[in-house]
Amino acid sequence: MIMDPEKTDYSELVEQQADLIVKISLEGRLDYFNAAYAELLGKPKEELIGSVFMPMTSERYSDAVATQMTRLFRPPYTCIVEQWLQTRIGLRCISWSIRAVLDGENKPLALVATGRDLTPLKNDQKATKKRDEELMLLLESGPQMYYSHTPDHRTTYVSPRILRLLKCTSNGKRRSWTDYLTDNPLNAAGLERTLRAASTGRREPPYRLEMEAGDGSRVWVEVNEIPVVKNGRTVAIVGSLLDITEKMHVDEGIEEAEILFKGVRPKEPEETRHSPLKAIRSIFGRDEGAGEESV
Image (cartoon, rainbow, N blue to C red; front, side):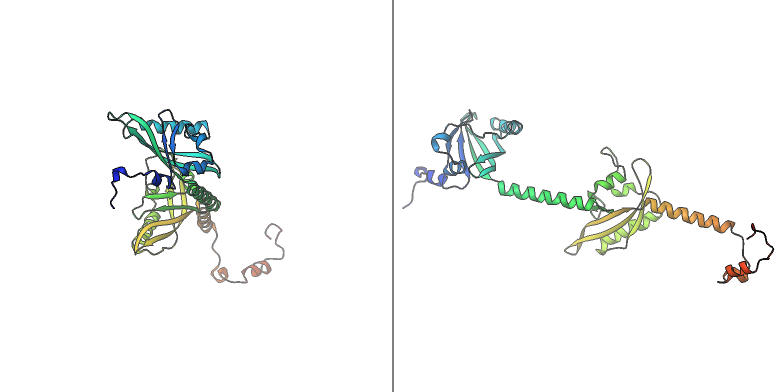
């Protein structure tokens, strides 16, 4: 027997839903709720009917929800809000999809809402956020500073310490990491290795770059990069920077000192210049009457 859909009683279908279903008056009171809603709150029907819908856990949260619900009184007459609700099993996060019931002149008569418990998802998100924060703390505590960029040099992640090293500002005009490279000839070799890693998908040896910070100062970094390859194609470059500015300054100072030392050192006789007994001969070959100053 075929049943007439217009005469079918859908109340049983509504009552069997796992989602929460409610109807709310324009004054914000419950006109109807299904069994799932009453079971979650653990209260009798007589206590819930006519009660205020969506009691808020804090005044600040109440204001945010009220702002969202103003959309129910203008097109498209729908909104989605989240509510932390005290239930018989503890505090739960309910996501409500609310729609206004309109008359022939598009004036709201009542509100209908469907709610779903998002507490497990929220707990997972909270745990994931905590793990991410712990991982970032671990990464940021070492000497390396991490970053990632696309094969065409668009930055996708930068360690906060790199931003501080380069003295980046929110209103800066430099958009790509290559904008911070100086005109030092060594930078061309480093950029070539990045391009080669992106095109071949193979890791290149570490290299050094000279970069100009936002205040005009120059810093040296040592770069270690690894291409990320998916389906035979490089989709990203991830790497780490090590600030070696002080080391480079020390090395430059040593080189200058060696050049200066070589320029003023007196020439030694050819026969003793490379002799391992040079020091001994200089001691035993001096005159016995030599003064203390000469010794």
